[in-house]
Length: 279
Ligand SMILES: Cc1cc2nc3c(=O)[nH]c(=O)nc-3n(C[C@H](O)[C@H](O)[C@H](O)COP(=O)(O)OP(=O)(O)OC[C@H]3O[C@@H](n4cnc5c(N)ncnc54)[C@H](O)[C@@H]3O)c2cc1C
Image (cartoon, rainbow, N blue to C red; front, side, top):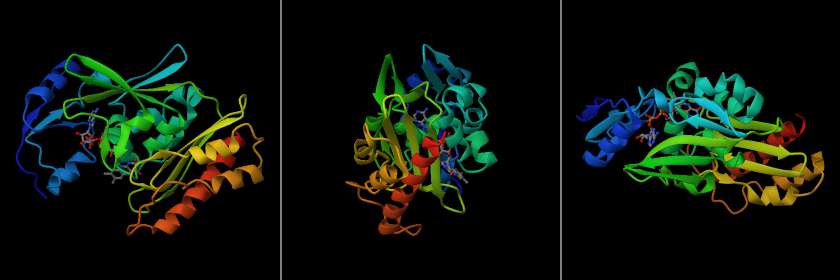
């Protein structure tokens, strides 16, 4: 339970952090530490250098500019859960944050850390996909944006390169017809099946993001297409939800079999869409 030894740096600015990340051997970012520290204690991760970004205050913010919400990567789950701006302008984020772990986890864990870690059972990816978010990534003298579906590459793998830092998450201001429904693993709260829905009642279109079911989170495009332009009724939603696990390979582990996960994907997609539609 004791991590391998490492060099520790605590930069005060993002520039300093990306410089260190590019120049130090086998370096890893430390954000809230809720996933990295346990991995280091079990020696599943043995970075030679730790770059602690938790005191870079410029990476913790929630603001609105021209109809877009911007959230700094170091913003904790708790700040997102309790933000009045988000409750008004992007309630899916507040709702998802409140479903994560417990008070300690929400106080310490960051949205950027969770997304960069890409745990297949993490909650944020469902909302990030349903909101069609953009992720801002910084390297030394570079900045690029990646759309949410391209960010999640494989199990615990993202579009981030080893010398890059996720700095910001951007989502549009969204209507109130949203919902996040999850079937949680009892001990940790991690998602066995988490479904985020966004309904645009003006264009009669939906976006559905699903986490926990497969090695990487996904947009349930078969569900979205089945509902495109159709009136949202109990019957049309139930019909479309049957396609929730279409084209994906559900995980099979001690928490749930592949067949059970596929079933949960359907049930929670239906519940999530019905709840969003009622709002
Ligand atoms: C008991 C417990 C229960 C939990 N329950 C849940 C739950 O119900 N739902 C859920 O979704 N999560 C849950 N979590 C995970 C929690 O949400 C963590 O916050 C999250 O996994 C990682 O965030 P962090 O800020 O702690 O990142 P860290 O642990 O510091 O970092 C995680 C990984 O991301 C990298 N990283 C971090 N930030 C950046 C960045 N800005 N740019 C590039 N790379 C970066 C690190 O190098 C590391 O590899 C739980 C954790 C614990 C300990």
